Structures are given as C-alpha cells and as structure tokens.
Length: 339
Image 1 (cartoon, rainbow, N blue to C red):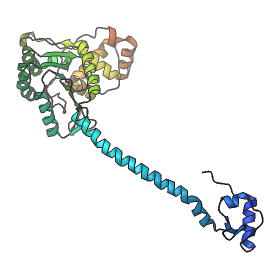
Image 2 (tube, rainbow, N blue to C red):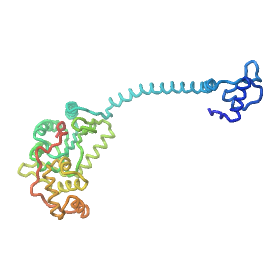
Image 3 (cartoon, rainbow, N blue to C red):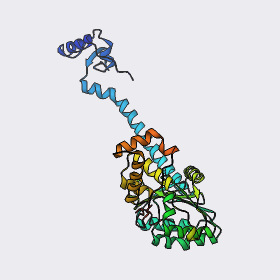
C-alpha cells in the first residue's frame, strides 16, 4: 500500500474547512479524502466533514495491523511446525550416527574413548603428537592394544620422530609391532586423532584440551580426517620390530629441521618443545649447533640465513652431540587416549 502524500494545497484546505465550521461542499484535493482527513457525511453525500488526524491514522493502519497480525500468526505456526520437525531431524541424526558431540570432563572423555576402542572391530587409527609417552600411560595402554591385536583389529599409530629416542615408548612399540600393529614416525606437527572403524573419531575440543573433546560420527568429516591421516602416514617412516640393542637412533636431521622450521615461524623454544615432544634444552642445542654452522650471532639472523639458503630443504644439518627426549616431556592432554 502506497500512502498518498499530503500536499500543501490539501493541508491549507483542511485548515479552511476546520475554521469554517467543519463541513464543506466545495471540491477538495483528493489527498484529503484518500488520507481520511475529510469524510462524506452519510446523510449528505455531497458534504464533507473533517476527521481528527489520529482517527484517520487509525483507520488507515487498521488493515496493515490486521495483515501484520496474520503474518505473525503464520510465522509462529511455521516456527512451531519446524520445531517439531527439528526434533525428529536431530533424533534421526543422532540415531543414524552422524552427529558431532562435545564431551566435557576427563572422566566422561575417558569413558567414551574406552567404550569406542573396546567396540572397535576392524581398524584403529591413532595420531599421537608430543613425543614420548609416560611409562604409566604406556603400561596402561599395552594390554588393551595387545587385546585388540588378538581380536584381529588392525592398528596403525603415527608418532613424531622424537619417540625414536625415548626408551619406554620404543619398548611399547616393540611389543605392539610384534603383535601385528604398525607404527610410523614423522617430523611434522599434527593434532591428536583417534578413529575407530572409520565410523567414530575423537579429537581435542576447541578450548581446554584436557577437559574437552569432540566425538565425530559424521561420515564426510570422518572421511576428511582419515584422508589427512593417510597422507601423513604415506610420508612417515616405519618403526619395525627390533631388539633394544638395535633400536633405530633418533632421526636427528629431521628433528632439527622441524625445530628450525618452527623457529623460523616465530615459535619460542618452549612452544617448539611442546609441539615436538622434546626438552627445551634439546631445542636450544639444535638452534645453537645450526648457529655455529651458519655463523649467526642472533636468533633473528639465524632465521634470515635459514630462509636465504634453503637449508631446511636441501642441506645436511649435521648431528647433535646428545639428543634428549625426557620422560616428563608429555602433553597434558594425552592422559585419556590410547598410546
């Protein structure tokens, strides 16, 4: 509805009618009649009487208010109907195993992980960052993982290279590899991930990683996560069954590349140590040895020289006199998850 404009002539004519006693039989501008400011008398169709503006406004707005009320009623009906449908949809998604759920609290997360792993029948994929695991966690995980292997569940675990210098983790790897599991290591930084039978996935939550975790059952999301795991797996180096005396030495060059790459990206020694699962002293040793090779006098100059020489991609980085991976270099958020 387009509202008629009140022209200046009409406004003056409205004033004249009011001052003349309130009734006129003369011709008036159409805007006064269209706006309801002048109305024909029921007993005299040729005479017009003025109407107070508030009453004229009420008359004009009445059909609009009625239409608004009808639209509001329709909107409410839509919301009510769709709310019922939304309930059915959410239940169907939950029952169909296609939801993404947030778990809060260590005990809740631990129980959900235990149930998922115990129900695993085909394959368990695990990506465990942050270097060597604590002996207590490994002792807890070993019987569970050996039981999975005995049931014929294929197990593939991805670690960072730093575990190759961590005795307790290597001992665990020897046991599970001898039972049929596969273990590989890589020099890249990745997030913790557990995937059971390509149907259920666990990953750290968005905030407090110790107190929050995501349980993912949406097929498309799980497919995406598994593809990322497979790509990392293809780049990783296998860790085979080997007696303690023949354990592979730490892959020092690749660890040093990872340290230097993170340093160039601006991470502190503490942050690098946490991401790679090594001690801060080891990080400092890698940085110091590289500084000696390149003759740099500061961290900033070292980063510049590394970038200028493509050292991370093409050069032999040398060896570290002593590579340390301390038992207490374990991430605080790995206490609930399979090793």
